[in-house]
Image 1 (tube, rainbow, N blue to C red):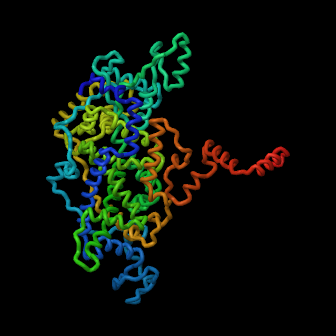
Image 2: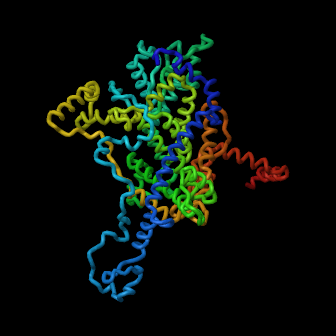
Image 3: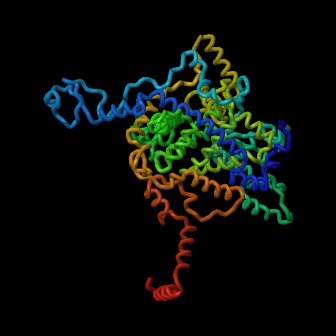
Length: 630
């Protein structure tokens, strides 16, 4: 791919005409590419379903009972019964005397305190549900976790070079101009006097991404006086300073940038959107049961302060809930109405799920697992293995999450990424796909997004700076000698025979957490509730619209696509800007109340109300108004 090829320059392919054509494809989702995304997604989901089916079969003691049923019974027994210290008979906690040996427990001396009090978390000792990996396998890293996903990493380690920092906070237009011009100069962009390249790819996340996107499209430089302006209105005012020139030309100063989003932060915000949407439905009681009991801990879980713990939480939910979703299907296959038992399969499970359409709890959880939490896991696996097909499949399947609550920034980023995929020239698209992620260590299961690579380097740079406020010279000194300093550290550790920091991934065992998740669902009979009322695990009624979450999210996205890319007016519908309501009535009453309506909505309602008033009533109202009765 040639850096001087003008066909790859953004001004050649990112045009308004091409954008309008592409938006139709994105809206209709009729391109064969989307069918490929869906197939890729459900191929992975079937693998997880098959593993869940095998798990249920392995732990079953007979057709109606399994390990989780025993755990539920033990938990119920601990809550409701106590044991006689003399005869070890179980009886209700409300009784003072043992019904078997008649001992008055109130007169017995206090025994050694039991750690398993009513307020302590319930824990039942069980055998491990998954076989432990051997020590030899442990040393091989994380390959066994994602080895079923094809990887596209190039052999060897990827070199990462550190450039001079820019000593500004890129949170404003003026500061961002300095950063972009600095990058353009270092990259040898011709616009800044270089001769290395015509364009360059820049990766950033969140707020910087949206700001750079605006700078690319709306920052104009006057061709006459070289002054810069952000936005069409500012440039139109500037034209008046050149009254003698009829047509004042301009250039987009930053049109040499090809923008790539940071996959690491995209994944973080996907997980945050998932947790926030489902917090009151099942996430809050789940994290509480897993030991996050204090107010600070619950807030940390809800806000996803720790990305690693959030990943473990979603993985626990996904595996535990999927096993409970599969359970009734497996038992149905085993019983088969008195006939010979059938072999449960992933295809059979997907057909079985359709028969549960009258159970809103089951259907909502099935959608969350089969589409959204599976997409988050696919995204993680795709990044780790540099598999762009799986990454883009996950983006497509999970796009509705950002419309569940309030995530306007990543709504925009997701739309831009979807449209850019159809706009990019084939050469450039292939290059980006081949480098969706990189592995600094060369481990084929440890790929990372470029934004996380930068954060790791930033952390390593800070390790060389002494505590306190670092000066600009300190930053420059470390950045310019970063590779030499790391080489020196490596040689010194080797000479002193010090252990280097391990690059292997810390292994986690989520067996107990998954079992707790399953017990939480099983003891409430949440997925097999005969009431057929959509409610949270804690029994609170939920908004009926949640059952059409994906459909509603796509509707909001389509209107936003038309407004953002082809500047088409959208209906004055308040629901397009509101988050999806979770709790029944309470949230809807808040967002739809008169106090929270926009001026445009209030004006429209006033006009509609006036139109319903008859001529006679209008005359009476006018007369009363003139008489000052109101």
